[in-house]
Image 1 (cartoon, rainbow, N blue to C red):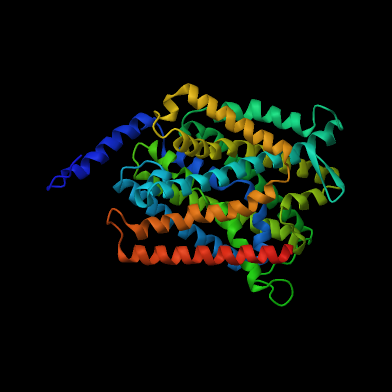
Image 2 (cartoon, rainbow, N blue to C red; image 1 turned 90 degrees about the vertical axis):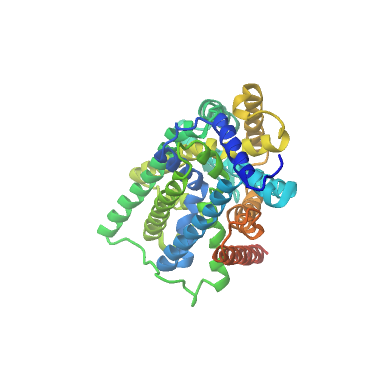
Length: 440
């Protein structure tokens, strides 16, 4: 289409894109509350159990400050993406990058999404397997909930139990064609996170009443345990905890008013700050300096009594169910990006039922197979995932603003984009170097 001097053609792609978007999703069916539940569920995944350990490293005051700062930066970069989505023709993250950087930009997003989301899904299945079936680490066998209840049986081995969860819990959810259809399962997953907070709060109140709460540091302990570089290792954990950029476009496309997306994002960020700080504070209050990188280990070590065992099993089962309900939300953007990469010229995935079903089942089968065959692969994905999440959350949105193909960036936007990119690169490099040095 040729561009007219009046610029009227500038409006034509946007109108055509709106019609296309309406055909893709149940426009008008999604509410702000449904969007909030899906955004929160995207953020609150497996990393929730690592939050207390980050608070231990940072201290109470810096811990909350860093959470708040990352949430603010996430809100800024989300606004970048929403603004350029509104001005352009693309309705996906990869398409948005393609407008600014061509096919290489689109490919970069798709690779990052595949690494991040596939890694998350594999990790979720591995953790669910650990909770229900146990694992062996350092020569010590840790029994799962099912083995504690029924003994070691053939049917409660890892392969069979995870297969059951995949077929009867996850498969019905991942076969839902629209993100809005997951709002109820997302609401339950957030409720389960609140249940964990309630349990931690009750235990903290009981410990306080008995005078058994641990001493908590308001600031990092530079004198004894913590170096300045250790502080940077907490950033990837928190960035991962606030990363939901891959689901911005699917959720936005189903809102009756796309402008409501900014409102839903801010509500979701506020909820997640409250969830993360509550878990970090009460977990640190309960276990103090003995807190592990995964707080489930601390609950497991304090389950000698009958009540302790009941609390431990409740926490572990609610966590496993929470991850099972997060799984379809993360799978949604993974499936969309793979389809966009492999079948760019095909009709919308949700309208092609055979392609949708085949791709969904193949992805689920691949995730299950890797989780069973290579259960230790999650260390690899943790390393890569922290890098790709930083790219998706900060570097790519900042690069889109600096490229400014639509000419809508203000000077302060470009300054903020530069600062966000520099901070993301520096903190990631220092965190990776510190972790490698510690391992070495």
